[in-house]
Length: 169
Figure 1: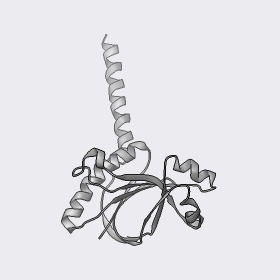
Figure 2: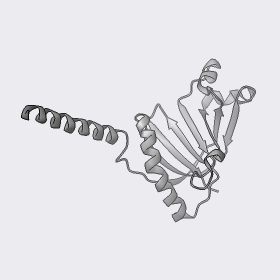
Figure 3: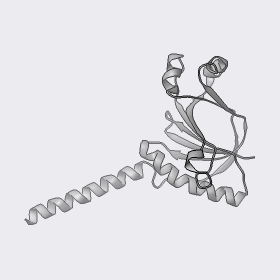
Figure 4: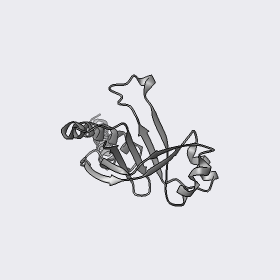
């Protein structure tokens, strides 16, 4: 009986260590800071199944984008507006006029942004990033007396980083 108890405790400790290591790897302890810098312009294609549609056009998307227009603390859930799509870059930018007939295009002009980055290791990184970055973003907005109409999340899959951008107006 004592042996079984030792095995159960060892398994439990091992399980907790694996969970802790997974959270740490996913960004639990990543430092969250903001800086203001010039960025853009950004062109985002969005629609249902945007990745498949772009692929059929010969465009490979390596940066996913989420654009959030409303503060969920101030807006009813059914009234929240957002877009999810693909950041168009390089040669794909020359295709924008053709793509506009097949999907929606959102453009964010070059400007000054409050920016933070967070490691993108797996899906858990997205959840941890939202939980860690958004409270710091709220503090940064308050401390610097900033206003913004939207928040942009860019998921750079190649470089394994999530950028959180807030246009400064």
